[in-house]
Image (cartoon, rainbow, N blue to C red):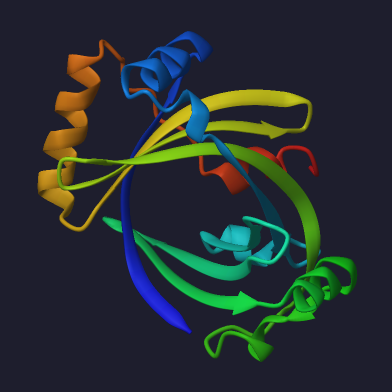
Length: 183
């Protein structure tokens, strides 16, 4: 199991801003699709506790289950690689979280998926992600900037937005946006 702290800054952007950034960074041909399958209990206990549980599919052979817990300056993440058959069975039948994560014990089932068409590129002291997200017959666009240092990352992100004329717009997590389909 891999554990890390994810420090990211993000904002929703318009389709036009997204396309402009793709062109500015010459990333139009680097978009790849990943599918996020979100899980929760029937009464959404994880969501209520600011936790996200997902299986991410990046290719036909790459699946990873991730548990995220929110904090003030980032998210604690626990990851575990899965085989394709493990992932497919978990998506189809649900699973007990205790089988993969020691700290929580719930039976969870697949609730909703989100298709994320993503590009990433190194940017100053971190990585810049440009995302087109499709869920619930909705398409939206966001920028994420991941860093190791919260304060430095915040300055860089604010300067990036200013340089590209982007107004910061708070956004919900991808899981929160996708869960709107189910409620």
